[in-house]
Image 1 (cartoon, rainbow, N blue to C red):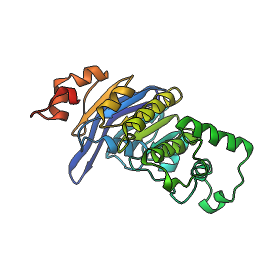
Image 2 (image 1 turned 180 degrees about the vertical axis):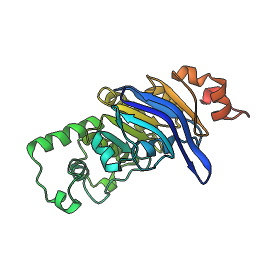
Image 3 (image 1 turned 90 degrees about the vertical axis):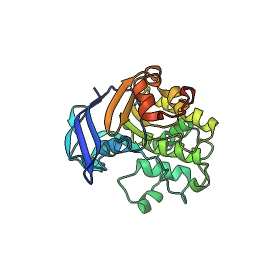
Image 4 (image 1 turned 45 degrees about the horizontal axis):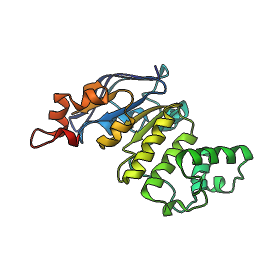
Amino acid sequence: MLLTVNELSVSFGGVHALDLSHFELNDKELRVIIGPNGAGKSTFLDILCGKTKPDSGQVLYNDIPVLGKTEVEIANLGIGRKFQKPSVFPSLTVFDNMLLALKMKKSIFASLFFKPTEEIDVRIRQVAVKVGLDKELKKIAGELSHGQKQWLEIAIVVLQDPKLMLIDEPAAGMSDEETEKTGELLLELSKHHGIIVIEHDMKFVEQIAKDLVTVLVRGKLLVEGSFSQVRNDQRVIDSYLGRANVQLENF
């Protein structure tokens, strides 16, 4: 088992943000987590990457306890995080952004004057091809489209060679074409990485949810199942879609 979570709980100001009794993820499994705003989805990823400290619980990654470790220590274990909003260096080229991902233990200044070896150059170009940015390597990152910035973020995570990728709302703000391409990219990446994706776009979820879908509501696990099972579960319809004037086909 790549990831095992037990009795994970955290509160903010007396309000339970997450109260997750159990969660498991297999190696090379792509798991989509859905739920309304405030369900605890991003909080869960924040805990897994060390950004937020829980009040109690257990998180095992490859049977190694994660809680109590720093964000850097967790990243070095092999857990990579892509946040919802792209945080690339807009004044640097796509290539240099990707180079920094490989040279993350050095300062930005030192990395910019570091001459990449042929092996590093090949690695960056391979990942650029995978995410569809091979023709944009010399382009300034700030000039990329929103979708391309998201792909660059994903490339940066891939270059850190994680076994587990945490991806927060990758389709947000994308065109239909970009969304479909992102889905294809994540499905391809899931052949080599375990992936947890948080998403609200149900068409996108349907595209990528080949394994289980997990539904969180008010910090708790409501249900897990295939996309079809979750889509037709009355508890999900009531809790996530609302009761009034909601058509199931919109889900």
